[in-house]
Every structure is written in structure tokens, then in C-alpha cells.
Length: 185
Image (cartoon, rainbow, N blue to C red; front, side, top):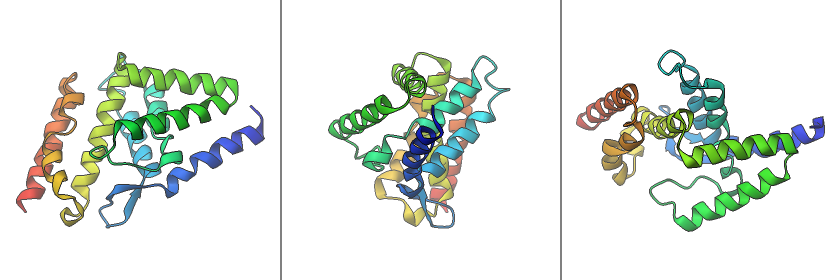
């Protein structure tokens, strides 16, 4: 990969800094997709001891690249994203990944396929962490910034993805307890 190719990839990925999500930060600022991906990567780095069988570097890579398709489509909240939206995002991402230098393209394609198949511990961890990070962020954001459906969604979202792991199930329970405390106040 040439330095020019490297910069071109980074310039595309920079769009995630300006691509906003539907959630706010604790200070009421609208969160960017890049911020979500950053914290997701941080979450993965701290799991060495809990999941010694996992390749944490691979997991972190998944966390960092998982929303690159949103460079082209923006963020569409999961509760309104349609199959057509997913197909469009997948197509645009695939076209971009195909245009990357061969080594990077192959690496990204392999990671995306693994995330899609959900067969490895890394892929399962990624999916659970992605959902749980969104819940954590909602719990940190002011309640009046939540849409009405998020009050119900925060009670159940991510439980299925965390169910493969006792530790993640316990984390999901802790997040739920925070949600319930927030809703009671």
C-alpha cells in the first residue's frame, strides 16, 4: 500500500467523525459514529482476562471497521433500518472495500464475513459489545433525549447477543439495572 492509498482510506474513514448517531452524550452533544466505534474498541481491549480464548486484536479490528459503511449512508437507527437500507449500505461498503489495496481489501472482507457469519467467539463478542455499547450510551444520555420506543428497547435490546456468555449476560444485567434506575428517577 502506498502512502497515498493509506491517506485515501483515512480520508474516507474520517467521515465517521461527522456522521452522527441518534444518541447523545452525557453532555447532550450528539454522538458521532467514530465515537461509538472508539468506545467499542476500548471495550474489546479490556476483555483479555475475561475471554482468554479470543483474539482481542481481531475483535478490536472488527470494532473499528464495523460501521465504515455508514461513511456512505449515514447512521440509520436499528429500529428504523430496513432490509433495503442494509442492502444499500452493504453494496456501497463492498464497492469501497473492493477498491482498496489488495491486502487491506482481503483483510476487511474476511473480517466482515466473519462478523456476518457469527460463528467465532470474536464475531459473537463484537455483536454483543456493539449492542451493549449503544445501551450504555443511552443510559449515560439524558432521559429526555430518548425516543419513546427506546424506553422499551433498552429493557430487552442486546440480551440475545449476550446470551452465549455468562460474563456478558451479567454485564447486560448490570446495564439493565442502570436503565431501570434511570427510568425510575
